[in-house]
Length: 224
Image 1 (cartoon, one colour):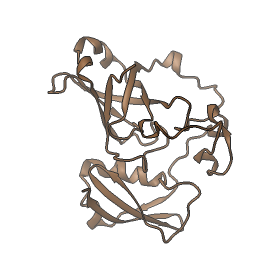
Image 2 (cartoon, one colour):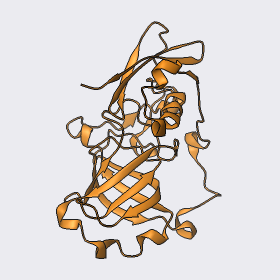
Image 3 (cartoon, one colour):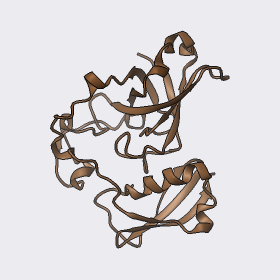
């Protein structure tokens, strides 16, 4: 198999990426096809669907190996569950699955047709193996049991971004950044109020600290 496309997103590393697709609908990304697949004919009819399935590779974990059990962040990172009962990236075959919103299609660009999507949980450059339409009658099961992840996590932290730092963030990225931070990007087992964390977002290095349930942004700089 070979990738049919790659994602173009605001995340330069795994840190900060929402732990599921759709948790931050304000995030915007683009699906850019490989040269061999830049055919408008291959996308005929796709604009009639509101959501798509992206089947992709955990490309940052190619050499990480796998374990029969993992520690899901939803359980605080302390309880172990079977890898096939989770969506952990550390799998025998590092395949990811994300449902994203299809915002629009730009048919005529220098890179061929480009899909603009919302809610993607992928690092910039992630290879996409396939794209399929989300079909509500087949893919939606309201009666399904969700196990230990039955309820969406929701925002966990209050977020404080000083105005002078917020001004450094492009206006169309500010709400998405605040939602990403509110999800608490830290590993679930870390709670050091003196520690400063950082991650790449939209060409910026965003640094923050967390104390008493409030995440405060302490730095926003252009990434080198």
